[in-house]
Length: 113
Length: 115
Image (cartoon, rainbow over all chains, first blue to last red; front, side, top):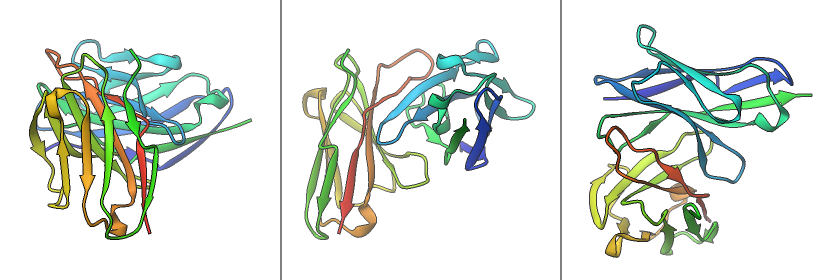
C-alpha cells in the first residue's frame, strides 16, 4: 500500500524567503513521486516528478525537490518565494505501471509582502 | 493541445436529483481518470479508463455512481439520487501510457453542491 503525508497544512513565508514544503511517503515498491500545485478554482498543475533517475528534480517556476530514500522524503523547495507562489501544493505517489496516484492532503502556502 | 476540459464548471442540485458531468481529455491520451476532492483534502481516486475500458473502480464509487467512456474519447460521470455528502469538486485527468508511470494532466474540475 502507498500513502503520502504532508507535514503542515499551512505554511507562511515572506516574499523572497526560502520555501520548504515537506512530504513523506510510504511505499512497498519503488515509488514515483510528484508535486502538483492548485490555484483557486483551478485543476492541478504538475510542478515536477521523480521517476528514479536523478534524485534532485527540477521543476517549473523555480521549484525543485530531492528524493531521499533513507528518509522516505520528497520535500519541495524554492530559494526565493514570490507572491504568485501562493497556492495549494500536493505531493503524490505512484509506482511503475501504476495508474492510481495517491495524493497527500495538501499544504497551503501563504506569501507575505 | 487544448488541455483537459470539464463541463459544467459548477452544478447546484437538490438532494435526490441526478447529475452528469463530462470530461474531454487531451486528444491523444488513452487513459482517463476521475477523482473527487473535498475541502481541505487532496484528490481521491474514483475510477480509471484505458481507452473505453473501465479497469478500476474505487470503493468510494457507490452504486449511485457510474462512469462511461464510449469510443475511448470523452467520459461522463453520473451520480444518481444525489446526497449532501456528494458535494465536492470532481476532477478529471488524462494521460498517455508511458514506460514508467504516467503523468496525469488535470482539468479545472466540476464543483458540485447538493442542497
